[in-house]
Length: 249
Ligand code: PEP
Image 1 (cartoon, rainbow, N blue to C red):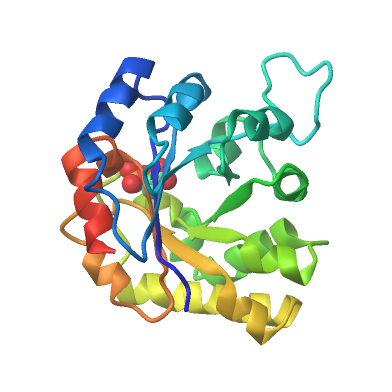
Image 2: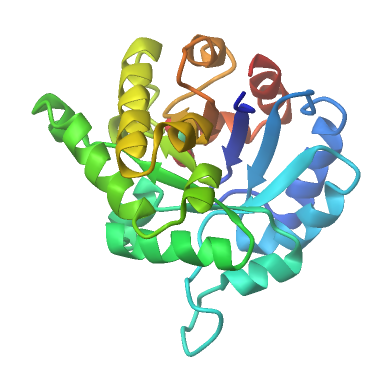
């Protein structure tokens, strides 16, 4: 049985005090037995969040990191530093990082390996652009992204990866993929993992859908055979809406 996982991606929103207020409001509510709940926040909020979620079921994630442990990489944060803070998850290869910060499948793969080195669970984002979907290339695109991201992992590591299938045209646009279409792509990703590793590993990997998930549509996705949760941007910023997402999972 795969435990569903709802992860909020706060992007570049919320100060430390906003984050503390948020946790106070969702404490005891966005905590549902059998559902993992993760808040992926800006770096500046992470120490306060790790502190605020103590004694709750809520986990904390970062939105990016550098694969090296330390060094002359001005402006970067390492996995070693995140682990030292008590962070559990890290988003890798979000489409905004690929588009605006030149992340590639190769840097994604380095980060996935580094996440295991520093005991962080990676949430690896993949997904096609609108023109790729219109050219019927969705499966080809995600297959390549997933294969490259997981390249060189052991079976044990691969089983622990969380993948977020996020069609880029659905992120922050209010246009979501239908639950059936998302499930078809996610089932295909699972098949590819079975080819690269084996069916047992593929069955353990949790694959989320992301792209304009809201409290009013989360149950449609969760009702699908292969969808194991959601990576949520906009709707994760409001405590009541985040709580409903976790309840809906
Ligand atoms: C995201 O940031 O990963 C995302 C899916 O955003 P939104 O839910 O706002 O579409």
